[in-house]
Image (cartoon, rainbow, N blue to C red; front, side, top):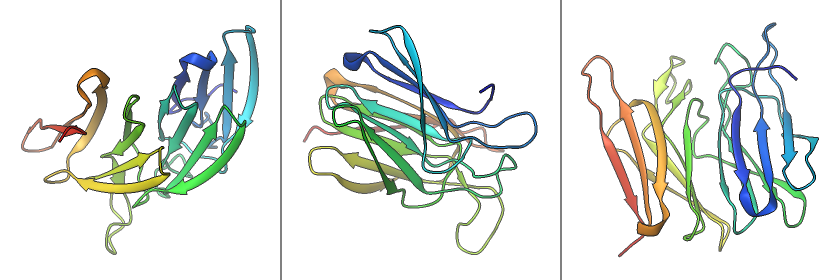
Length: 193
């Protein structure tokens, strides 16, 4: 399905690449997950639990876990969601969880060795009782070893976060931007004591 505003991630040890969600030229959103299997050189299609666009993804290749988080149910960004679709490639099963807050344009990363997935930043339309695009200062952290979620916070709400990690050093990074101050913070989450 041709679409934009989708997300992509992979499970290297399973040879799987995922392209999920997104929106089309006529305002529709999609639940489609196109999956390429590098071992068989074939495509297959799976489905997210709901149609959405502007979502984030991250994976834990050793554990065979892929997550697709947040996004908006409509292309207009007026209905953010807190849904997290979780695919376990080992069992070939889907499950769902919830973010702390409905969020879109968030970023995802993982610490593979630590078994942690992070989703942070982005926007929500329903912080308090306002319905404007509000930046979010929450980081949702999933621990695959015990299946629990925790949250942490950035010092303030920033726009346009990107995320990455350095597994060797057990560090996850979020970098952002804030208008009109032009601040560019870097947040570092460490799993080391």
